Image 1 (cartoon, rainbow, N blue to C red):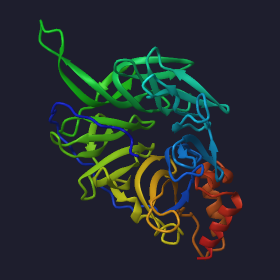
Image 2 (tube, rainbow, N blue to C red):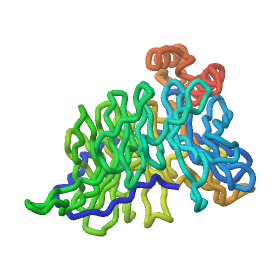
Image 3 (cartoon, one colour):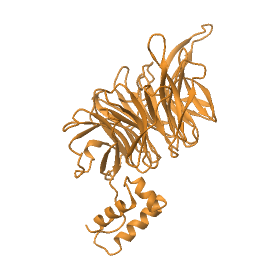
Image 4 (cartoon, rainbow, N blue to C red):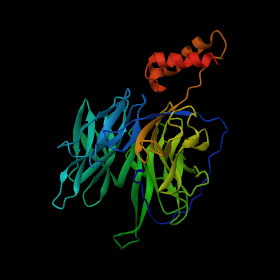
Length: 409
């Protein structure tokens, strides 16, 4: 269920520095199961500033899955292009609740599914077409409804969709992340030309890239065969995956100011970065192999196993193993994939939202504790209603009750 970022390439040896680590205590998280459409599986791949999540979920029988938006405690079916029996996936969601993703539109003469990228806007799923190709898929969206992904003819081309049209950015590969400046990251094939008179490329390097101001920049690797970008924040910082040695395991990276930093693995064999917010917090997976993983969050210079940060009082704390973190917003809410390890839903894997347990500004036991806490939240989030939504509370009264419990000690 991990994002499909697989790269093999020619070795490019560069330094792989580690980011300086800090020692601030990480937050604890509460868990919300986003559910399914009656099937046994769902996955959440994108989250916006309000904590609304998109992804896809299965119907009974698990043969059809549809893109969804999870908002205010409910899962909304976004449908599919063409027949309702077609499957669709939501990949990214912006702050206006517009969703980018992909949908089956039919099948070719051999029975293979044909996919088209879509933009879900104002309650309607719009087909973005294929730019003259065979298939297309959308992977990310920004707050200007610009979308990136890929279309396929004889190969895969990175595109940006903007103002009603798909534009090929001139890279062979896929765009996985786009920020509000229209900067894109993903994975592409960097073709190195041969010396004249040979007309063909001599090397094909699979690399993470940054598309900025009309130029595709190769981000290099951590020293191994190849790399791929997965997400980009407002500052142009990128997370993704790179190998360390030829044919070796991949490590998650954070690329900042042109330098690619190794985020480590917490002692496991591999790690992969999938989501990043404007604070430079990263989520992804670590594991012994691709079939045995745990979700991680990289916070304040340190990587943590998300499974060790679940609030012990949460009723799902002992029944779910989180296998990957896929997106994180600026308030630290995480869209993650987890699998039940016991109970009636044992072995089912669902989309979850993880909400940081808030640390309030007031001092427990003091008369002004409640007022200080409310004022600080209102200032931080632009109002108490916004604070309640951003912190994952169903209502302002639920937030007020949490503050009262905190202040009573």
